[in-house]
Structure formats: structure tokens, C-alpha cells
Image (cartoon, rainbow, N blue to C red; front, side, top):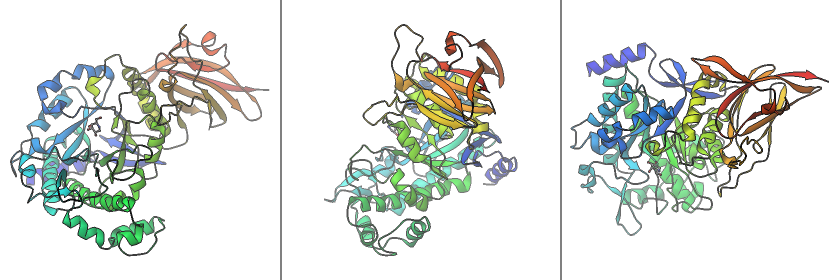
Length: 521
Ligand code: DGJ
């Protein structure tokens, strides 16, 4: 314990523990004392359970330009026998990540993984009397540990605290692990709530004062200032979902708090999202979803933010729902939609100041996937992006896509400084046969100075206007940042800019252009 305390003091003294820090209207992740932008990729669930198997993917991760991998820390692997910890799976992972200069976000697969409890150790699975499960209305147990059992919570919190103590001991000086996700996609299904006796008793009782005062203090209008769940929130599955969300959140709070007490890395929870029209019970209910954000915040104050796993095409809508004051956006998982994924990343980071982005099953990507191209550009512009997050000098652009996959390619206009920027997504091809995948188009735009903008992305045409004058294009240069220094390439004043009428980044490849404007009458 003394050794741990010393490691902790050393890390703290250097102010080097990864942490979140407010910058203007947003929060940034600080690693080694400086803002850090995650170019992530989440491993498939089982990849890191075999370290030899994982080894083969590092060249690919390098080619894709990842600076961070998201990888599970599995309860059953670290505590195969109660009270006996084995951290070889974690140490091996950190060793590989360090050898490839890559950071790690650990995902605590404790009591819950996609609603289920498949990652709990055998000694928990096999002892239903000691570690109660959620129950169906007919009393049968489910493969979902009950959040109402102190034994479940305490065993989970003990294992998580042991993991954090181990990280403190082996990683506080190296800081390979920069954040931790607590549990994974918590949710109740196929009913909105647990029907165990403990749950039945609690749902008949009063709503805890802590939840009531939080909601009242955050402007929520309630039917009654106190009373049972039904009296306060009404009757039905939506109320059952709120009830479960509170109990999941307070359980997670106990786990996160036990871990933070030892080593206070930033911690978050992630959510499986809801298909349109589904009712609580028909989707993994009560997780950290946008309509439950207040309940989760009230119940789990040790959790720094709630994060969406965005597999649906309407990325923009979901990302916006999580980008709310006090909740920095981080997308720990997103689907393998080769066309839309990189543009979504640019949008999240440029428009919503996301601290990072991370497609799922990253080992299934190909080295020449557009993601590598996008991450290469993102890597080059990272210092500028971090400098401009949190104020109004940067925007992200992409055509929004509906849940059904319909792309709205209507041009968009933005006021950025003294100019209005009109962004179109169609007609950007330089190829004889255009790809016509407008959902792949997108990027971000930074106002560098009074008359200067940087545009990074692909499939974009930008024109400019200003009040009281005509906005002219003085010059457009494409280029790259090498070690943070701008190295101009071609000067684009001919066909590439329609003879100075607009800025265009063709749809084939992510690129960077800098434009200087001037005014005339
Ligand atoms: C979301 C989960 O969080 C992941 O662990 C994985 O199961 C993916 N779904 C699979 O699509």
C-alpha cells in the first residue's frame, strides 16, 4: 500500500494523471500535461484475450494512424479465483501498446457487457444464491446480474479497484492508460426492469431524495415533490426505465468511486442507442441514454461523461444529443461504414469538439481504408484543432444522414468571423465517373485569422460571402503539416478552384487547403 501511495503521490505531484480540463465551452482530455485528441480504434471483444493474436495487428494500427486503442479489461481474466488477481492480460496489452507508442482506453467488462453478464468470473456465474441475477416476471433468473444486490456491487467494485491499483503501480509513470470505461452498454432487456424481490420492493417505495433534489435542482418538472416512482413519474415502462437507470447508475457510482479513490483516471460509461419507435424493454433500457442523462448524472457523479456507441446512420443526431454542457463528446464505438465513418469523425471533432473518435473492430479494417487517410490529415492538424476547440472559430461539416440512410446533401452556410461560408457536397468529383457517395463527404474548417481559413476534409466545395463587399479569393494553397509546420504544396488558382471562384477538395482523398480572402466592390 505504501508503494502504491508513493506512486500515486509521484504521479500527482507531476500533475500528470490524465484528466479532463475545461477549455471555453468544452472539456479536453489532458495527457502528460497537454491536450490530447484520440485517433482511436476499438478492438473486437476477444482480440486482446490472446496477446499473440493481438500482436499481428500492430502494423495495421500504425498504417491507420491510431494513437489510441480501446481494449477490454475482463473481470473473468483478472480474477479467475476470488481474491486472486492475475494481471498478465493487462500487462501484456500495455507492453504491446507501449512498444508501438500507442495509448490505451481500458474498457472494464465487469458485471455487464451489452446488458449481459458474460464477462463475470465463473465463481460469480455459478453462485446464484450469493450473486443474485435479475429476474423475469415469472421469477426465472436471467444472464444479467441484478444491480440491486450488494454482493454483486461489492465484488465488482473490489475487482475494479484492484485493477486501478495495478494500473497505478505499473502505469502511473508511463500513463499508457488514459481513460477507463466502466462496464459496457448497460441495459435491461427484454423487460424494462428487473423483477427480483429486491427490485419489486424498491419500486413500490419512494423515489430517493437524492434523485428528487437533483432533478428539481436541474429544472425538471415533476408531478409530485415526493412519492413513489409511479406517483412522481407516472405508470408504465418509461418509469420502470428511470427506476432501473437510477439503480444501474448508483451501482456504477460505487464501482467507479472505488477505482477513482485509488487512481483517478477519467471514467465514462457507454450506451447502446435506441431504434426509432422502440419502447423501454424492447431495447437495452436504462443505460446512459440521452433521455436519462439527468438520472445518470445524479446517480453516478464519479463518471465524467456519458458516451454513445453510434452504429446507426444518423450519426449527427446522436452525436449532438451527447454533446451537451458538461458532457464532452467521445465516440468509443462506431460502425464499420467505410463511406461515412471518417467524415463522421471530422464532424464530431470539428463541430462538437469531441475528445476523440473510435471505430469498432479496428483490426478488421484494411490498411488502405479511408480511415487511414482521414487520420493522417487529423494527425497533421491536431495542434490547430486542439487550439480552436471550445471557441467559435471552428466548424465541422458533413451532410446529415437519416436513420433510414437518406443523405441530405443540401448546401449548408455558416458564419465564421467576418465571412459566411457556403459549403456544398455535390459536384466535387474530378473523376470521369464520380463516386456519388455523398455520405463520405465532410471535414472541418478553422478560422486562422481575419481573412484566412483552413479547410480539411474531402468532397467539399466552399464559396464565401461577406457583408458590404464581395469576397474574393486571394490564394488557395494545398499542403501538409510536417512536425506542426505548414509546408505548402500546389497553388490552386486554376481549374482546381474554378479559376478562383471557390475552394474545392475533391471527393477521392482527405486533404488540407488554406485560403486567403479579400474584399472588393
Ligand atoms: C457494441 C458493444 O459495446 C461491443 O462490445 C460489441 O459487442 C459491438 N456492439 C458489436 O457490434
